[in-house]
Length: 175
Image (cartoon, rainbow, N blue to C red; front, side, top):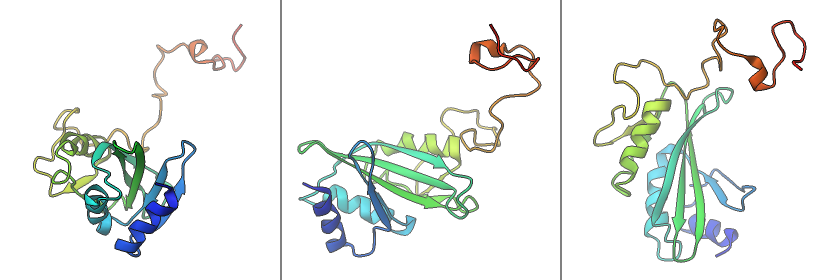
């Protein structure tokens, strides 16, 4: 099924759900939908006999601090195994309201994936049966994958920049 037909099928059943779409460098169709419609769209993509994106390969959080009002996002990677078709569904939310509906009722495997994205990005999956940290310590009060922190600790003296292709402390290239 061609991307145009997939988009037409979605538009036919759920007009206005797709905010934007493009085809990535890998040839996979990307569609964006508002968080208010993401659950219904994902359910449709899973249950529709023609599309049948029945497998949630993964979901991941993203953080774009420069996108005011759309700083956090979730990307759902879907797969139709019989026809070997993939699709990405994206939704974005503001940093001060990081709520997205859970999809654990559609795909039970989303449970730990959503917990991971909560743990690292602070995305709150509304309706999740057990939303708590999964990899970091429970009392961690930050979300480490957000782009809010320096990449390196400038106070460290135990790093040797030569191993990273950087200039030395004197500002010259290493031999």
